[in-house]
Picture 1 (cartoon, rainbow, N blue to C red):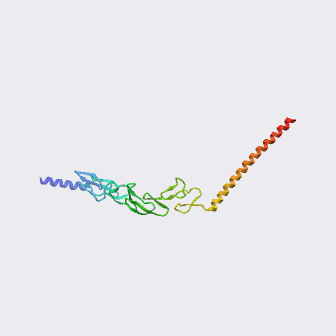
Picture 2: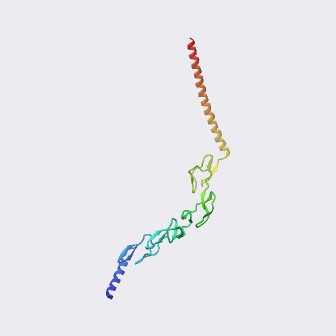
Picture 3: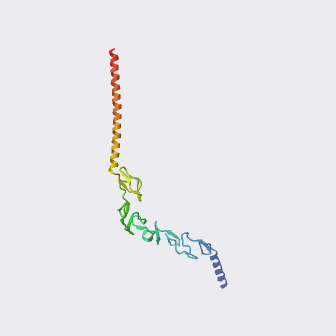
Length: 209
C-alpha cells in the first residue's frame, strides 16, 4: 500500500514538472491558466491566485476585467474599484474611471471641483468654452474652426473677435462689391430700356413712311 502511494506521489511530482509555463496541474492534467493571471501566481491544484492589474480574481479562479481605466479592483463595478489609473477619477455619472480634461481639482464619486483656463465647470465635468467656435467644431481639447468674425488666437485653439479695423475693411469691401453689382445691373437695365425705345422709334418711323 505504501509502495502505491509512493508511486502516485512520484507521478504527481513528475506531472507537475512536465506542465509548460502558463499551465497548472490538476487531476493528473495540465490546465492552461488564465492569460491575465500574474506570472508566478498560477499554482498547482488551485489555479490562478492573483490577476494582473486591471483584472480581478473571480469565483472560479479566472480573471475578469475591472471597469474602464481602473487599475485595481475586487469586482466589475465602480464601487469595487480600489484604485483608478494615475490621473483618472471615479465618476458616478459614467460609472467608470474618467480622465479629467482641463480639471485642476477633482474627487472620486464627486467629479471635478475647479477647471483650468479655457474650460468651464458643467455637471462636475470640465468642458471647453468654445467661444466663437463654428457649430460642430468644438471638441474636448479645443476649437478646430472659428466662426465668422473670429480668429484663432493661440495654439490651444481659442477664438477671439477680429480687430475692429479688419471688420470695417471687410464691410467696406462687401459694400463696394454690392455697389458694383448694383451699377452693373442698373447699366444693363438702362441699356435694355434704351434699346427698346430705339426699336419703338424705328417701328414708328417705318409705319409713317
